[in-house]
Image (cartoon, rainbow, N blue to C red; front, side):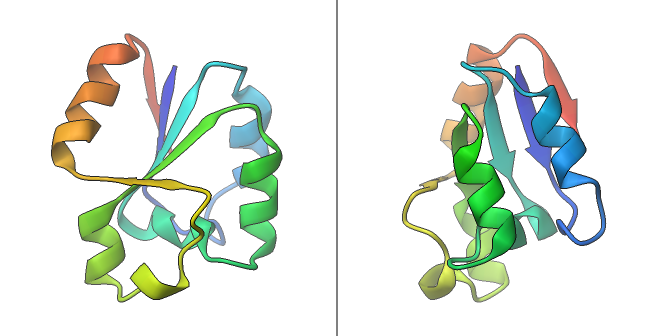
Length: 95
């Protein structure tokens, strides 16, 4: 399953989202969801502990000025890879 997080991790129940995930799932951070991937944050530790693939949308990182503050452990992708992720995962859930 592909999960997309578009809200700030302070504005949603990130632990509940992560409890739903399973090995082989992917999470794409977009819009304000990219805040979850800030280096050194407690949210990042939770994301990295989950058995999922992590991605973030490049344009949203740039729009928020976070490129230099974002974890290198999350794969940064463009819109083309976003489309590929939606093709790879038949089921999707937006948060």
